Image 1 (cartoon, helix red, strand yellow):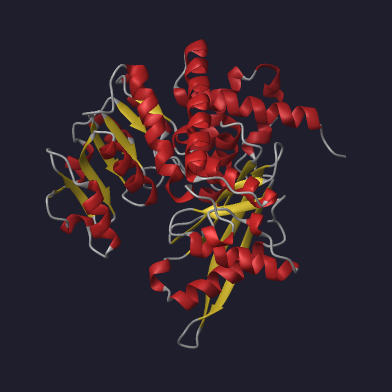
Image 2 (image 1 turned 45 degrees about the horizontal axis):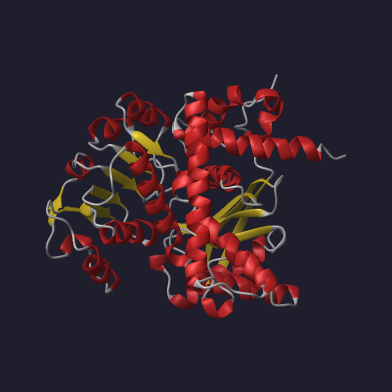
Length: 425
């Protein structure tokens, strides 16, 4: 009898890994003869947990726990971000790696899925402590990462500076500059134009194309965004630039609304300057319950996983959910949204702009030939639109949700590669 694929972690309802496994179970009946390989998707190829000791500025030694999970490498080297967050767990990192496998395959990028993280609140560290943490973590996972093995990138609470430290540490340990070991680097170190905005831009493209298919235009559409960081903030900015009306925003400081539309650019500048979103002028502070009940045409959850729960799925008032975050909707909530006629563009398509431009960066680093930002954005748009069309076609063909359709496409590609490669030895 096949094992349930949960040997690494407890079977907690709505844990990220459990959510991922349920999604795989839903796609299994659509895999044809490849279903015999489906257990491959229910395990990580490799999961590394590391101790990260650092010297604090006050002379004490602090220990942090870090992880790097490589879910599947059948189609190419691992690809996935690194997050610094106090709630990072091995369960979460495994699930995020699994979703990266699906995301990369759904976009037909030549990567497998990986993810990493450190359980830490980076706000409690000074800049020198943060650098020491990053460099020690990179050294600890250095044996499994590399330009042709596993390529990290920024994620929650990490940025281009973190990637620069990671690239430099790996390069010093290997004795040669290896710009392709990470993506999301500063432009001066081989980073790509358009990378910082790519995930938010991809969310906007996915929303725009799906809205058109549903018969309404972005211009004048009411938008609500949960998460006002690099993904949600950029998406909100692009929605406003296209003529949409952003009526609600939420970040760690709380929830705000303005029925007449929020000045997104001014709000981004205010937050970038150190202000709290809830203190921004021109908005009204609202409760969390009021935020989830705001009437909208498009709702973008762009914060963390498990945000759109059953309760919130019943309360939400929108036509279209576009997942900017990874795993923001629980399987039970997914069913409720489906029953209510609310379409969901899943994370594995909606937020794939970041990894797509990361692919461009990786290719540019290998060739030492760099493209213009216009070329980057044009290539991103073309890949995103084509991938979304394929998902919509598959959903209609099998009469399934867009999420299941994306999984059908991705899992078929991954398992076909697995079958062709065979088992060694």
